Amino acid sequence: MNRMQPSVDSTQAIAESDAIAVERTLTGDRDAYRVLVERHSDNVFRLAYRMTGNRHDAEEVVQEAFLRGYQKLGQFAARSNFGTWVYRIAANYAIDRMRQRQKEEARRAAPRTEDRDGMENDPLHRVPDRAPTPERLTQSIELRKQMEQALAALSDAERTAFVMRHWEGCGIEEIAEVLKSSSNATKNTVFRAVQKLRRALQPFVETRAQARAMGTES
Picture (tube, rainbow, N blue to C red):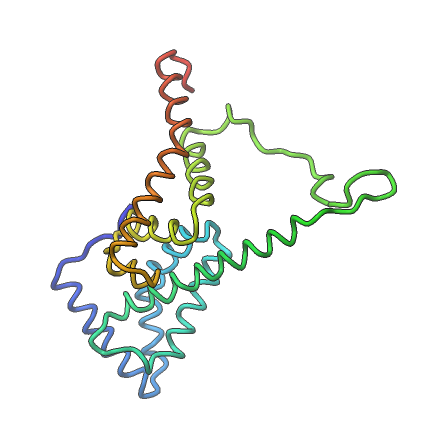
């Protein structure tokens, strides 16, 4: 779902209001920055959640984005849009967070020792799997799971480009600035992401189509 596109007048009014709040913040009015946080935090959280795939990391991205925005507010160009500016900060930090998480997961995946009984010395090994079977999952949950797995398989740049373009409705230039890439390269990144997602989801789509044809779809 793309971000709701406000009218030109509404966008301009928000930008002008943001510019005033930035000005007041720079003069020492902290309440003015709180207004900016409240106004833009929902959009930033939605982007962060879609990029990181979990609430904990998304909340961290939101907090860090606005903290960095506050610390670098003196570098903010008055002619720019504050919402877009903090959005870029959040996207860049989300990429950093995803890379950090990949490193953490790689360390956790190191060979595990075994205890005296020959069982893996891993608490998760002793926890019974109570996950529902695929037959009990609703179609929407199945599709969401497939989509999350497909997104996770993309590179950081591809996932960022796809989320910003097709879910957040961002322009190519805006995405290119976040990725520190050219417009043409960014277009190619978006295209690659879409093609990879289509290939990853194709088996699921075909299975659903066969179930409908046989009348066995739940």
